[in-house]
Length: 182
Image: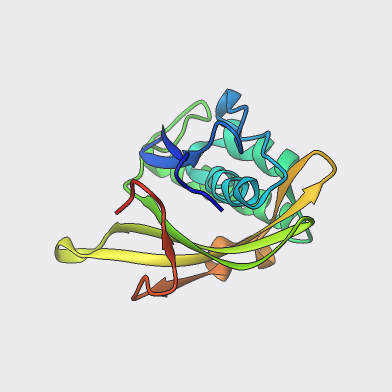
């Protein structure tokens, strides 16, 4: 899989990878759709849909993203979790009108393949952010996408909770660093 054609697009403080050939081909309204039926398309779908299926961006983004591009037994719980988290955070931070909760300081830094077939792909995605005293904290989140007739869809995390699919990471050994994220 050739990563050289990857480009980066800013999304509320996160740089997200995209490819002219592999997608996403449509990001209207903050959503991500239109991925190639290829390993690179699967990877880009997992990253782009996974990031957008988060309360941080407000119900106008996470709602349609989850309802339209997330599948599996945890999808209803993920939507409910995002709605509850957004309601609580927006009230405590004084955010009104369904607006995003603000930019975040996170980088999608690296990945590793767990499995790939034309019907399903599983990756571990490494996100990095600032820790205490100038350190960088990394977490690896397991993401699965399925090919659904015309596009990749993300399988919701177990129980609808992203922390259930993530673990703290101490080393990037065995991971592929995204070009431009070194």
